[in-house]
Image (cartoon, rainbow, N blue to C red):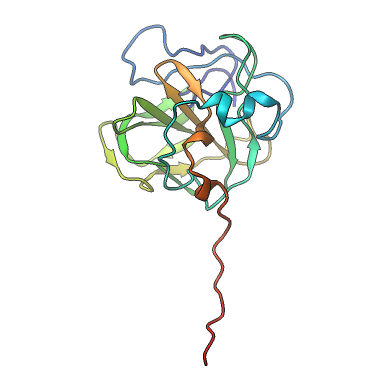
Amino acid sequence: MGAGSGPGGRAWARSSPTGPAAGPSTGPPTGPPSAGPSRGPSAGPASDAAGAGAGVPAIARVWPVGVRPAVLRGWEPPATPYGPGHRGVDLAAAPGSPVRAVAAGRVSFAGRVAGRGVVTVELAGTGLRTTYEPVSPSVEKGTEVAAGGVVGVVVATGAHCGAAACVHWGLLRGGTYLNPLSLLPPWLLGRGPSRLLPVLTG
């Protein structure tokens, strides 16, 4: 999605993996360039939650978008701090779809970075923060949000995910990028769309 990065930790061109060189830690961190073709969430052993999310509590109660969205590109941690990779996951989402906080926390950033809307939520009592982009924020910095609370809507840019609209979901502890899928408990990872079952009468 162009050059630069938001708090989502997206590996865009001309970005840094450890956050901004100056300013408060609640501001939008940045990440270095993304390289290589898009790959799914199982692209290589480094995409496994065990290697990319050790020590991350599975506290998410919802997906950021939809019920169980398609992962257009998975977690691809770089071999070196400034190496190529994908510091987050891209989730398929239609423009205008609500973007939700996956767990309770406080909004530490809501604004634009390099022309893209970004929302960062610090997860309560964890030292972790999640990021969502590109979105049109519906919250302000300092807003307390519950799990499932809407923080914005999806904005189509036609850049990072090509013709498909997507939300880049990131997870950080300090300046370290982690696999955001590790926040999802097994029941949420495996849950498909709800279906109504017939009512049986005797």
